Image 1 (cartoon, rainbow, N blue to C red):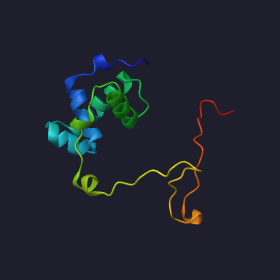
Image 2: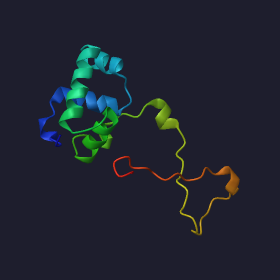
Image 3: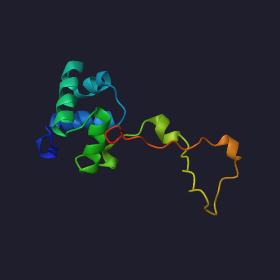
Image 4: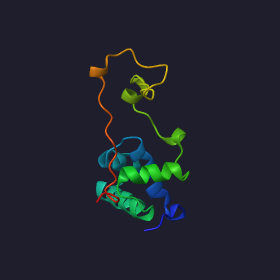
Amino acid sequence: MPRRPDRISPGQLAALRLSASGYTSREIARRLKTTEAGIHVRLTAATHTLGARSRTHAVAIALCTGLLRLDEVEMGREAAQAPVSRPEPPPGSASRSAAPRSRQAPAQPIRDERTAA
């Protein structure tokens, strides 16, 4: 289904925003003063309207298309206090980690199911 961000209702957008903030359907329902079933309907409709495969994908599409902005997404207390890890530099770069190679997890290639034979 094609992405139609202009067809997202305010209620669907509010539910997506809270989902992006890490709230469960039950918590979203409490905050929006509606039922959990109503939240499932809103999020399912938003997911289909955006052509997404999951709620997470719908949130990503909403962020990429500008329906949601990062400054609208709440960070929980745990996320705000969590240490930020730095990505490993590419192999062969001058600023390599001092950690022994045996302690680093090997990189796994990403497999695209659509193009795999």
